[in-house]
Length: 136
Image (cartoon, rainbow, N blue to C red; front, top):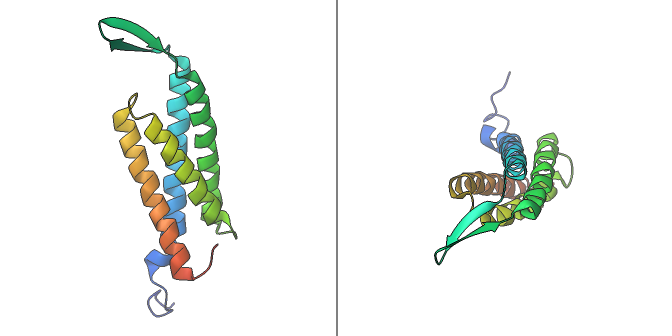
């Protein structure tokens, strides 16, 4: 059996969509579980100027749930390597990144971790598209 270097492809080039898809599935599931937990809990309480105000983030949680499911499905599609799957996965990951950053005040540690993994997956998919020379 010939090694990947002898065939002209580096092992990391061939594995980029698989790794990116796995990362997107993980962040999508993290977003879904986080959104579910937010929906099950009550509103956030914010202390402003000596007063305590409830902030209901349920609409954001529903949006987070839908986008998390879309990211997980796009990650599974990116693993298959079908034509256009990487483009859809990049689009879903960018959308999830934007929604995650809007939730930064409410869950800063989770948002920073998930956003970093989303950004890594986007970078892997973009490098794979550039290396193959086509928009898969």
